[in-house]
Amino acid sequence: MQCDRIWRDARLMSMVGRDLGIVEDGVIASRGDRIVYAGPASDAPDFDAVEETRCDGRWVTPGLIDCHTHLVHGGDRSHEFQLRLQGASYEDIAHAGGGIASTMRATREAGEDALVATALPRLDALIGEGLTTVEIKSGYGLERDAEIRMLRVARRLGRERRVGVVTTFLGAHAVPPEYAGDAGAYVAAVCDDMLPAAAAEGLVDAVDVFCEGIGFSPAHTERVLAAAAALGLPVKLHADQLSNLGGGALAARYGALSADHLEYLDDAGIAAMARAGTVATLLPGAFYFVRETRLPPIAALRAAGVPIAIATDCNPGTSPLTSLLLAMNMAATLFRLTVDECLAGVTRNAARALGLAGEIGTLDAGKRCDLAVWNVERPAELVYRMGFNPLHARVWKGQ
Ligand code: DI6
Ligand code: FE
Image 1: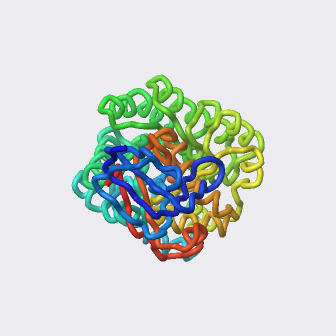
Image 2 (image 1 turned 135 degrees about the vertical axis):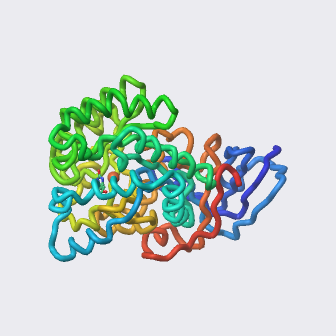
Image 3 (image 1 turned 90 degrees about the horizontal axis):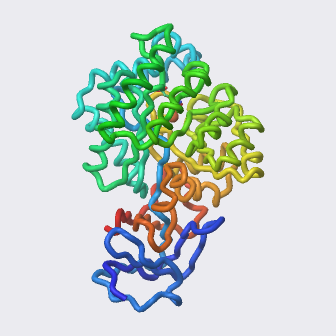
């Protein structure tokens, strides 16, 4: 059988099925950007490959997927970090005109090239750890042109680097100063002007809302979700992060791909998400950075069979994190996720949170040939180390 590339002598974490899908003596073959075979060497067809790579017994996983980031933004918030070290809370800072509004100002001032230049080092850090797909949100422009610029930058990052980029419109991230005190008017602008304009340019793969006391009420959130649905766009939600507003259940009602954060998610929300097949995306970097003490309801999510994804939430205010490996370690240590759950969270379930379960996230014939090859002895080592990168090689679309 003809193929372009073959990887032999690999130990596979295929992530097919419910666990790690381990294959001890494995082979992967690709044609074009697709996997044509991934499985035991003993069952492999007789391949005639243009190029052959010996993995010398190394572990191979699907390329890692970060399904929730705010990677594109101007400036940083290290000064607010210092204020928080002196006792100010995230909400105090937000109410004093800092927080998302301060990143909004820096993002509006930055041109497209500057936004690309500041995002690239963050993207490169993720890629350097085996990332092959990243979701990138808007949400720091908070006006039509600046939101569109952020999404254009996100698309451009996908041309500057060999990586898949999935965009999310998050115009409803905060009420900008022009609409202070009139969230309803801003939501109308989001629904009637900003979102349709961004979608018309093909810049929107999904729509997200920050449903929170310091963000948007459930009623306003629902207007944005309905506008997205009317445009045929999938939705997701920042839900139940700092308080319980029923965000998980609201997300489920709109068939959301994912509901994210979820520290305050309640039983009704869990049941609704389970029924809707909505992924629970956990963001342990934000939990750590804001020193949250309330844990997401892991045991109940597990019991209900809600798929769990893990992401960096890379953003300047609450999670300046550019390591999915560290996010996995935090999910294990802080949330007590198992090694299998952590690895599924950055592969199979992250793919599902992006609506790409048929395309990426497992080593399976027909999927995109996105691989990470690791210098580790066993799977747990990928979750166990902190600040050490054992990546040996990364393959995107078969190359
Ligand atoms: N939740 C978060 O944790 C971030 N956005 C959101 O909706 C925080 C964004 C920021 O503070 O800049
Ligand atoms: Fe976020």
